[in-house]
Image 1: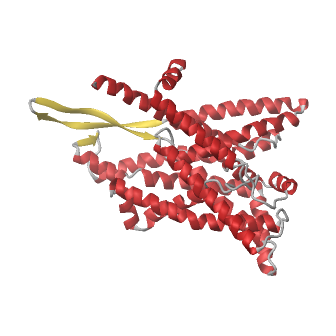
Image 2: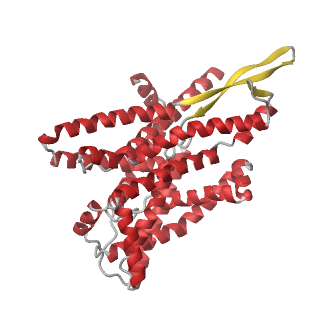
Image 3: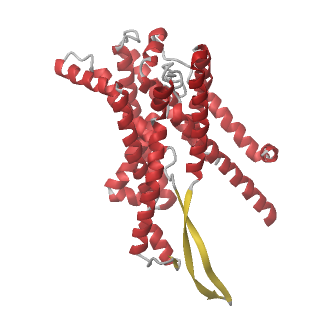
Length: 424
């Protein structure tokens, strides 16, 4: 391991990429601590401490939401736009063709539309968030020009983060959006540890030990599920070309968790809307609107309801995203075209149905695991009574997954560099 790290920093190209990404993350952290004007910090802190949903969302914005900073929305609007665009591929055949069949040019156009959709969503979410903070008495009265200026600044902050994420991705050492979320989670750890120390109670030593053990087991389970895959044996018909016999056996790896951390991020984005809108409308002058908004706000504040809905959304999004990224019909067609087949399964439609059956079975394990990880903070708080840890299983999953994915891409670049040397 030490030799590999030494090798990474000895190679100028990879070293410069890593330093560049670290510099971008520092810029992100600086932006997350530049507040918009007119905020009552003391009341804001109390509000976030009493609202678990916003507290968890603040972790993913890198502390930008708690500080009401210029990047308070994080990459949330961009993620929401991605959800909408991914859903459109299942509803509109033209969008599916653009995304899956038109190659790199189609994907670039698809990504461009996602960026444009991010803009109105950022405007809407920034307006809703500022209105919510004003309704709770945490912001001073604003005139129309101040309102427009703050909303425009927050929207520009989201676009800025979207751009930072894309230039990180272009370096080929990880997904930019995931790394920004990773930086936000890691930045919250010192505060969480400090709160844990300040609230230390020797009488609850067993709870703290249990928390540490549970965290270690969670990390082990995340690595196991993330790396887990089922290999489908593929046999290729032997052919003779230029006097050489070609063919033989291979395997098709199907990962237990094909969707990665995307379902949890998608589910969190969806769970945000009812709470924010309900809190905003609860102060409405229309009685029936305020009444029903208060009911929804109370419902979202109920840990049992919130945890159950969160779990079900994560499971549903896992299946959805797996269906978007893995198409059994296309895989079956490609195998048949290349002269490959699964032993005991006829080529064509039977192969497609078999792959679909296998993927649904292994995805169930991945979906239930992701759902359990998502609601792990509620389980920890219920078992240990410790309320100071807000990152929970979701944060651990994202941190571990991002680190593993980034290391794989770094190793890939090292391998490619070794191949280049051999070619020379």
